[in-house]
Length: 250
Image (cartoon, rainbow, N blue to C red):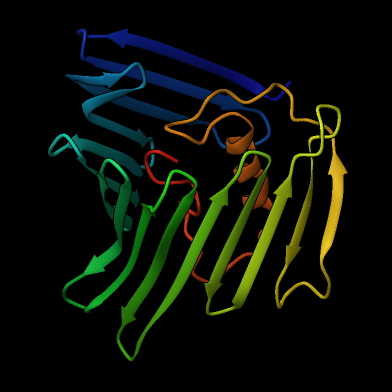
C-alpha cells in the first residue's frame, strides 16, 4: 500500500469553495494542499464562467494560482502565477480576441522590467473563406545580451473529403494531407518537409467514438482530420499550443 489520501471539500457559498487534501505516503514525503476556487456570476457556457480565481498552496508554501477574466464580450484574459516556496518561478499573462471570422492571441511569459527580459508569443488566424484558414505565429524573446524572433505562417484548406495544411517557418516548409477513403477506411495521411527524408502515407480505421460537430462550417470528420494532421506535423521551433485549431467559423 502506497499511502492514504484524505480530501475534504467545503462549499462556502454558490461561488466559493475550498478543498483540503492530506496525502500520507509510505514511499515519499507526505504533503498537504489547500485549494480555493471562486467562480463569478457571468456564465457563457456550462464550462465557462467569469471571473474565475483558482489557488493551490502546499505545506511548503509553494503556490499555483490562475485568474480568468472577461474584459469584454470578445476579449478574454488570463494570468498564471507559480512560486516555489517564496521564489516566483512563472508568471504569465494571456489575452485573446475572438471575432466573427478571426482569432488573435498574445502571451507574455515571465516579463521582467528590471532585467528587460520577456518571452512573447502572438497568434492570428483568419477565415478567408468557409474552407480556407490562414494565419501566423510569432515568438519573440529578449534577455540581457540576447534577442530574437521566429515567425511561422500557416494555412489549412478543408474540403468535403480531404484536408491539407501547410506551415512555413524557420525550420522550412511542412505540408500534410488527409483524405477520407470510405466508411471502413477513415483516410490516408501524407506528410513532407525538410525533416522528412520522404513522404509517408498509410490507411487507418475511423476514430472511435465519432467526433461531434465543431464550430461553424468545419465539424465532424473535418475536425478529426485537423487533429490527426497536427499530430503528424514535425515540431516547429516556434510552435505554440494553439497551432491550426481554426478560427471561429472553421
